[in-house]
Amino acid sequence: MEVVQIEKEVLDMMFERMAYLHDMIHTLFDRLRDKKPRDWLTLEETAEILNISTRQVRNLQNGGRIGFIRHGRKCCYKAEDVYAIIIKSLCLHQIS
Image 1 (spheres, rainbow, N blue to C red):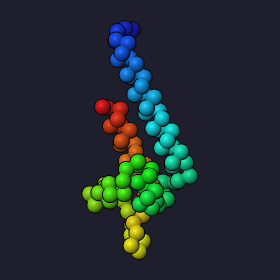
Image 2 (tube, helix red, strand yellow):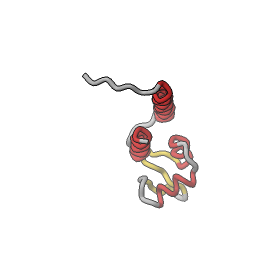
Image 3 (cartoon, rainbow, N blue to C red):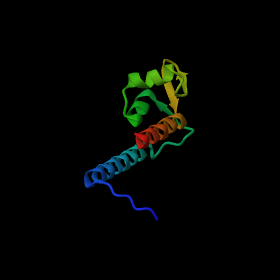
Image 4 (cartoon, rainbow, N blue to C red):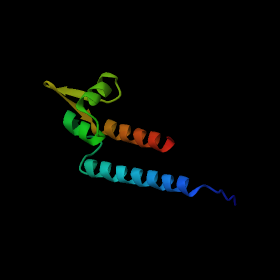
């Protein structure tokens, strides 16, 4: 067994970060509770779930980073792709 010493300040920052990630996961779960991976989301729903602007959703769309279909003049986004973006974002937050 290896024992590692860290300063209390660093430990407190680590706990704060874990609490932040915990809150983020619960918030995302609440937003996605009734959505299935096969469902399609509106632009506004997608922006709300990802907590980004509608313009940023369109940037994801234009960059090919999120699946979508056109329904008349509106675009709908695959919930599965939104899930993937969330998971990727959480992984990046854990690294930083």
